[in-house]
Length: 254
Image (tube, rainbow, N blue to C red; front, side, top):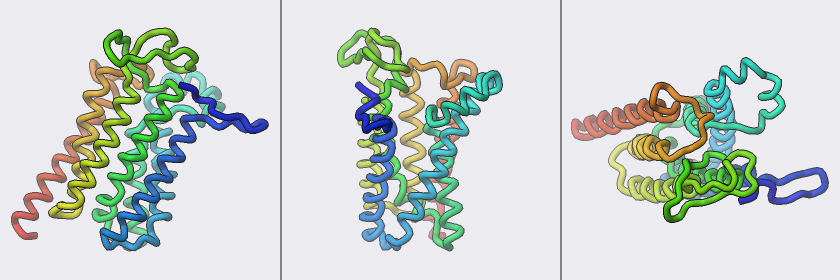
């Protein structure tokens, strides 16, 4: 695992940033390809992806700062100087969905079909982003000496020389499997919003359980639950409510 992949003069290519960029590109090409099959105008894909990427990154940074608010207040200059580091995935999801909603409303497009189109691509981007986490050593697991553990030797984030749960690899594989599942649902969906709602349910459930294996403590805690687990409960409830409402409207013929 190595975060600094390549040096070109004074320019450093970081594994985390590279995987985030590749994830966004993969999401874009995947959406462009699938938009034609969904009979949605592919000319809108670039603007939507760009809007969601910017709003998602801002949301991820804002939630990271809120999670670390006492430290930010104590030393704001440190967080300004390291603004490119530290993001929370849930903030990215919330910011990205909000940005997508604003974009579709501004362009007079139906939100739910585009929401369904986006979410399998988001799962792929998240899977690639977790590979970046592995390279950087962030989002690491708890101490674990069982089969398939991983040990970092030169990480600035994870404890070095200690066997850990491979949470980054596990999360990446789950995200890719999630994307395939959502594509399957999209092929047989009964109503607009079903794929997006399924994403919220599946991702929040997986993330809630994965948090028990995480070892990085800077995520913040509310009681015995991490901040991400608390958010997961609300996201799960929202997704389940969407599924029940959509299913009810489909049965009633609305």
